[in-house]
Image (cartoon, rainbow, N blue to C red; front, side, top):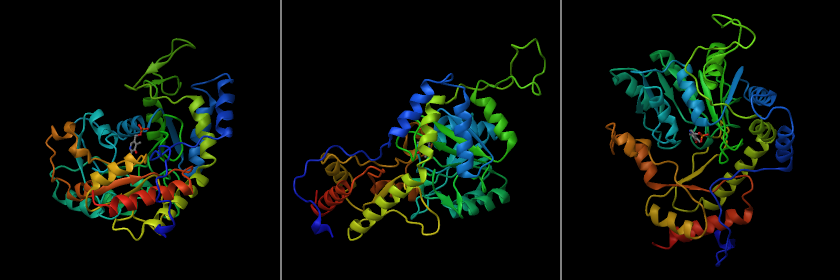
Length: 392
Ligand SMILES: *Cc1c(COP(=O)(O)O)cnc(C)c1O
C-alpha cells in the first residue's frame, strides 16, 4: 500500500498533533450566550453539567475552568491532605501528580502495562502488598483514550481501602464494560479536560463527575471560594445579603460562554470519536508493515482515540526530527513525570519505573483529530516510512 503514497516533495502546511473542530453551530451558540444576561455564573453552566450527566450516566457533574483544577478539587473533595499518599501513573501529564502536592500530600507512581501503557493492575497489587503506608487515592489515567482495567482497580480499592479518581482527560466518549467513561461505576470521581487538544473543547475547561452527593456538594463549594448562601448550611443570618465562607475554596469557575461551546461540542461527541477511530484504523492499515509497535487496540472497550502513540525501537529522536522538518507536528506523550527535575528533587530517579521509561524511549504521537484529511494521513505515513527506512 505504501507505494501508492505521495512520496515526492509535497509541501504541506504544518499539521499539529491535535486540533479543535469548531463549527458554525458552535460559534452561534457562543454568540447567543454573549448576548444573554449571564456570561458567567448563569444557567448555561448548569445546562452543560446536566448534558455531561446525561452523556456519562453519572448522577452529578461539576464543571470548572480546567482539568487541572478538576483534579485538584477532586482530591480535596475526597479528603486528601497533609501526610496522605496518592499514587498515579508516570506516563501522564504532570497535573495527574501535581494535584496531590497541591493538597500537601505525597506522590508515588505505579509502573505501566507494556502494551496498553495504562497503569498496570498487577504492579499496583505488588506495590500495595509491599507498602509500608497505603495510598488514600489512586489515579489511573485512561491513556490515549483507551480505558483502564477499572474492575481490577476497583477490587484492589475494596481490598486495600483506597479511593479512585479516573483521570479521563483523554477519554470523554470512550466506553468501559458497555458504559461511558465518566459513569463512575468503579470510581469515586472522574475528571475531564476540555483543552482544545482534547475530544471536545471549551477553550480551557474541565469537569468532575461523581455519584456521591456529599462529594458533589463539597466540590460545588470548593469551586467558588468555599462560599455558600444555602440557608440549610449557614450558621447565622444577618439579612438577604448574607453568605458564609465555610471552606478554603478557589475561583475555579467556568463561564457560560465556554459552556455554550461545550454543549454544542458535546452534541457531536460521538461523531468526533467516530472520526478519530476512522483515522486510527487508516493508520493501522497503512503502517502495519513497518518495524514499529502500533498503539494498543482494545476490541472490547471503545477508546476515544485521543492520541496515536507509536513506539520505535531505534533512532526515535532522528525520526521525530525528520517528521518535524516535514511540517508534521509529532509529539511525545509523555516524558515520565518522575524524570521532571521537580520530582527528581523529591528523590525519584531513572530506573524507578522501567516500563514507563522503555515506552518513553521510543514514543512518538502521530497527529490525530477529526479534520485530519486522507491526504495528510498518507503524507504522514509516507514520511514516517521514509524516516524509518533512510538510516539517520
Ligand atoms: C490535559 C490533561 C490534564 C490537564 O487538563 P488541563 O485542562 O489542561 O488543565 C490532566 N491530565 C491529563 C492526562 C491530560 O491529558
